[in-house]
Length: 351
Image (cartoon, rainbow, N blue to C red):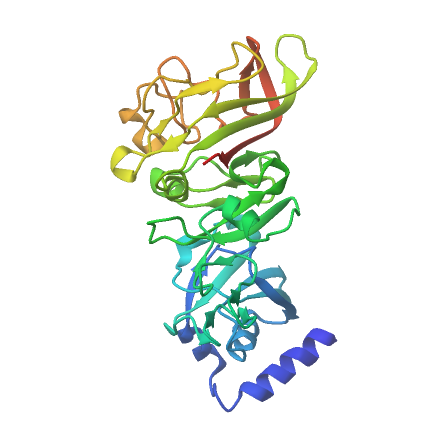
């Protein structure tokens, strides 16, 4: 009943602006299968998807809306603020959610109020930024998760935030994990509900939801190649040994992890592995740049995965430890192959 009242109110109050409700979509970039988990300022429910767009249009602060279809007559509308200079590829894709994202296309600039941007307050001497923004006038997104922690993002576990790395024109949403020094989640596999058998072009940007997630190669490159920065990579696995069947819980760390540009085929490199265990290198430490390959570009990989599988930094004779495998991912630990019920790949900024 409540949703019907809201829907009726929206139709009545917007009738003067939109004689044909469908024309409201002309004001938005429509991103099919995309969603945003950050900067949610309001949530409501409507009978029809178009009402979500009409509701967002009523508020100047509303810059985008994620619309989830829960049933034929019930849609969840998440309204987002503070989103400027982004496109569909700035947000994750998830085809099975029945979701789409609408981003306002009015090209309105980030408003300056009291000498500050993005709704910041002024204490008489300086701008006080809202969480997720930084700069003297709060004019920009944070560069990465570590800066987010430094400017006050709370330790709330896994948190979706907007970032724009140094020297990058690409602003995008990523996941920060405060449990590991505000690290950046690069990849995670648990439920196996997300399809990781994708083309090279699809791997460029983020996809997945919940326990199955991929950050996107463009985002990885932008984050890990900021001037004067160094990131360590953590592979965490909880699983069972193929040899003994015993439960195993471990982490393997790689130092100074990088991901190259598209021209370099997003090749990964790391200056070495450091871990309390030996013979646990499932990635290929210090083997030089390893190009990323998806199934549609397997021919350019030094080590070609058997059949069609997920994209990865495949190396010769080292194709077993792909986190994007169609089956349960595996990793090498103390010389034993471990099948991981849960596996994650996170990078933490050291400098």
